[in-house]
Image (spheres, rainbow, N blue to C red):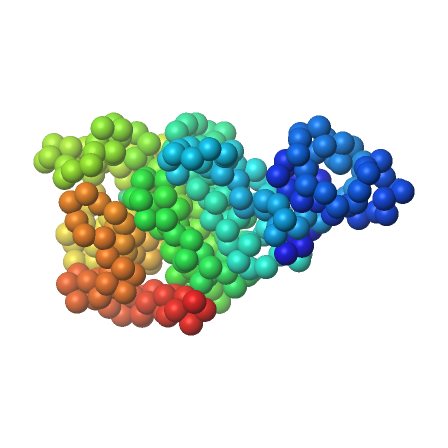
Length: 324
Ligand SMILES: [Fe+2]
C-alpha cells in the first residue's frame, strides 16, 4: 500500500517513492529502500513536503518495534512521536486499519512514558496525545480494527490503553450526538483512570498472584492518588477527576473509595467500569483467560451488567464480528 507521509516521519527500513522525477533530485533512483539515517537526513533536506512510502516493500509508520527478538512488549515500543499520531488522525489517504494501528500503538507509547515518569510535562504531553486519539476515534470508523488490536497482557499500561480505547468507543456510541460533553477531557480521563497506580509500590502492582489484605488496602488508594497527582500538577479537569475517583464505584454501593450509590456514580465512571471486560479477557496467573464472548456472558450472567450501556458495549463486539 502506498502511504503519503511527511519527510520528518521517514526512518531506515521504509521503501520511499520520491515525488519528483529522478533528474530533479540528487538520488540515483526515485524509488528505493532507505538503509541509513544519512539517507533519511538527505531526503529531509531535499525540501519535499510529502513523500510516498510503499508499506509492502518496507516498514510502515506503525511498525515501530525495535529490531531483535526476545524483548518484552514494553521494551519493543518506540518513543512516542506526536507527528506520526497527528498524521494518522488528520492526514488523508490512510486506511482506517492503518490509522487504528498508529492510534493504538501511540496510546501505548504515551502510557509507558507517562506511568514511568508521571511529572507535569509528561501529563500535559499525554493529555495532548489523547486529545488527538479522541479526534481520531470520533472522526473515523476504526472501532472494529481497534478492538482487534487490544493486547491482553494486563500490564498497567496496556490495561489503561484498552480501557481508554473501549470506553472511548462506548462513549462515541452512547454520547456521540450529545455535544454537552467535553469529550476530549472525558476521553483523556478514561486513559488516565489508573494514573494513581504510578504511586503504588511496583511489588504490589506487578505481583503475579493474589494480593494480601494489606496489599489490597494499598492498591485501593489508587483513585485518590490519581486525583491528587492530577491536582498537584494542575492537570485536573472536572471530567478526569470524576473518572479517576469513581471508576471503582458501583451503583449498588459496594465499590470504593466512597461507596457511592445509584445516580451518584457518574455516567463516565459507569462507562469506565467496563474495565472488568479487560480484566476477564487478560492473562492472569490465577484465573482462566476468557474470550470476548465468554467475558461478555460472565458480565451479564454472573456480574449483573445490563441496560443500554451494556447492550451498546456488546454491540462494539458484534461490529468486530461483522468486519472479521
Ligand atoms: Fe483502577
